[in-house]
Length: 175
Image 1 (cartoon, helix red, strand yellow):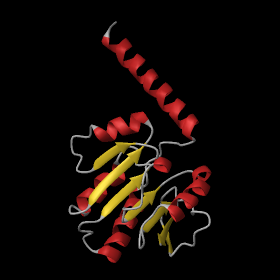
Image 2 (cartoon, rainbow, N blue to C red):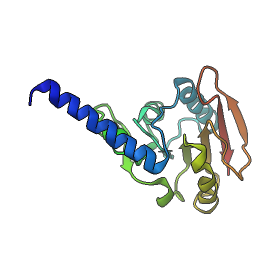
Image 3 (cartoon, rainbow, N blue to C red):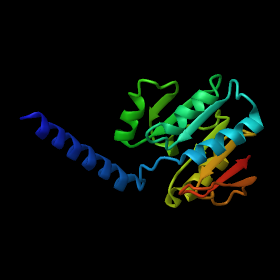
Image 4 (cartoon, rainbow, N blue to C red):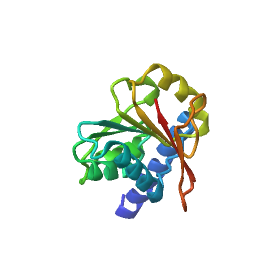
């Protein structure tokens, strides 16, 4: 097999695997917009300063873009990306500049009770399940960000408009 055929076969396999996981878990690997990342960092800085000793989870972290920015701006925080799709997980895990942790897991099956900041960019399909999990499995005074979609059954503390971003709104919940 020549190199061009190998590359083409690899790309086809990646697309097939990604499509299978996207269909199975009803997710699309869509990165958060740069303006949304900036808004999260700005808001988090105004609330928690340098975020020293905080545990921050980006649930549905995809390719790791937001985790990378969070770990850069908050070097004394523990930033962890949670991703279930194998291709984005692999890309994030093997990022040579990674200063954050990344776990391949289902966010609905992990313990969130000791996390200080939770960030989500999930489809509306997952938001109903999410509200139930958050009500029963988070610590007091947790800060939650949801990009693009509100978390059903929870009242947002603030809704931040995001210019020039697909998700347009960032919802913050202070539980």
